[in-house]
Image (cartoon, rainbow, N blue to C red; front, side, top):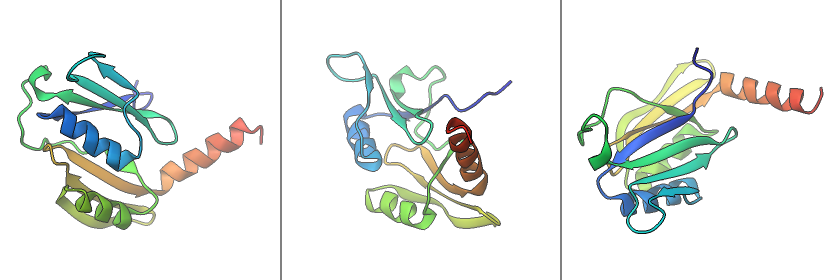
Length: 142
């Protein structure tokens, strides 16, 4: 039924600041914006090994009136160095949500609140790397 992560949407009250912050964090700008001219209502970045989509939506357009309070769901993005990623996010203005925590062999997590009130999780995930290696090998005909 669930075939893979398609798009994660985060909310922001100030889309220009959100665009600039995520461009700094990700090292790339959004590839998609609506409207194309004027202040953005929606921005989308393609990131990572599988080009997953990270969307930013002006909170005014939330289908359920999203509050500025952090929600109960955390999406973890794989990183190679959780502590380094957390330090960088905090240095760019995020605030600590959950300390770096080892969950088991090969699984380490941490999370921050971005400057717009969204929870952003980072994780070293051994399973992610196994799948990436498997897919890379099968694409090469191994």
